[in-house]
Image 1 (cartoon, rainbow, N blue to C red):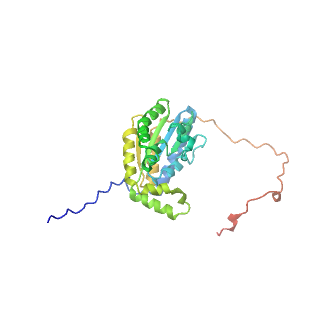
Image 2 (cartoon, rainbow, N blue to C red):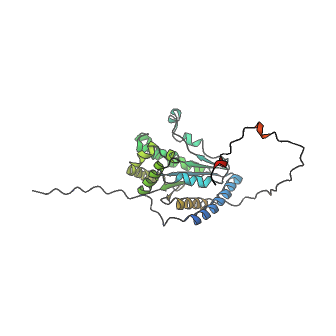
Image 3 (cartoon, rainbow, N blue to C red):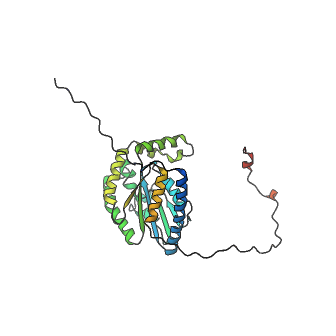
Length: 284
């Protein structure tokens, strides 16, 4: 009687996100982050002064650190110049528009920076994997997206695209921490938890997306983000290295002297509704 060959389980997909080295210590991280943020302010002033237009796309796995990186990028920037674009799910009307139409409305004008916290690439990722678009719509996106981005670049927009890559083990750790932390539970949605069970489907979708949309005019840059500190430093440093910004002359400013008083008297505080001194109740 022939023996049945033992069933061999399918090989697990290789983990995404290989950390480039040991975790970056806090002191050098904070020192370099401040230096890079100072350069980001100079970049902002150059964009504003020259009328340049810069678009930065942040994509990647759930819990890969996109949001934290965007916070560090924008921390010291002028929100009137550098805007974060994080669109909700499309309305019924938007569903009937050309797919890219609602994103076009958020592209920068002269002297502006638009940071897309997720972008038109939703169609290549979550919409495709979760079945929110048809296979025909997905394939149409993969055909149209390179042409759409070439038009942006041809029109003078500087387009940078970053994919934040994280291993499945680290993603699971971050999901569990969010579940246990009431201040971060809002970061987890049923859609995020569903993505956790579809790791390989998202991997295949990302690979196909790269094949079609990693074009010479708008390359994808992968940020290894198992170590969030390294990811933030590496992404910001790379962005700065790709834009030929230069110092912009600023007007000399000095604080003027106050004019002499004219007898103004502040109304009694008893006539105002003051915020209670909650801080005074805290233990020293």
